[in-house]
Amino acid sequence: MSPDPGPDRPLLLLGGSFDPIHHGHLRAALDAAAALGADSTTLLPAATPALRDPLAASAEQRLAMLKLAIGDDPALRIDDCELSRGGQTYTVDTLRSLRTKWPERSIIFLLGADAFSRLQRWQQWQSLLELAHLGVLTRPGQALQPPPLASFLAARSDTPRQLRQSSNGHWLPIEVTPLAISATQIRRLLARGLSPRFLLPDVVLDYIARAGLYGAAGTP
Image (cartoon, rainbow, N blue to C red; front, side, top):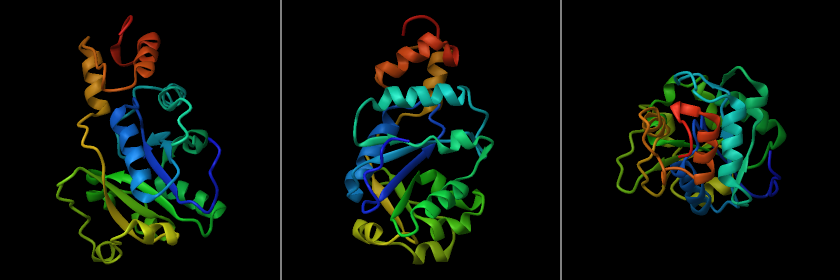
C-alpha cells in the first residue's frame, strides 16, 4: 500500500476489478477526494469479485496496470490487501480489517450508483454502515435509486463535513465527471481488433499490447 497521509484525514476507498483501469475510474477517484476534502483516494483492486464474471487479467497484471496508471500522482494510492488475501472478495471483510486498524477514523467506501441500488445482494450488507460511510458516485442530474431500505435513507447525510467528522454510518451522493467509459467496452474493442486509445492511459494500453491481454496484439 502507498504511504497513508494520516489518521486525521478521511480514508477514501474505491474498490473494483480494474480489468483494466481506465480514465473513468481515475477521474471519479479525483472528483470524490475533492468533494470530500480528502488528500487522496485509495484504489482497492479485488481478488475475485463475488458478483462479477471471471476476470480476464490476473491479479498481478491488474496491479501492474494500476501502478502504471497512477504513476507518482500523490492524490491516488493503491492498497493490494484483497489481492494478498486472495479468494472470494467481500468488501465487509476488508472494512472490518481497516476498522480494526483505524477504530475512530472516517472511512468512506466509494461505489457506483448501480452497485448502490443492488446493495442488498452484497455479503453482510447490513454491516457496511456500521464499519464505514458510503459515497455513491453519480453523474450530474442522475436519479439515484437507493436500496429499498428505510434505515439507509434515514442515515443519509447532506454534507461532506459530517462524513469527515464521524467514523461511519452515513451515505452521500457524490457527483463526478460523466465519462461513459467501461472496462467491458475496452475489452470488447480490443477483442475486435479496434483501438481503445483515449479511454485509458497510454501506458496501460501499451502494457495490454505487450502482454497480449483481452485479445490485443502488437502495438496499440
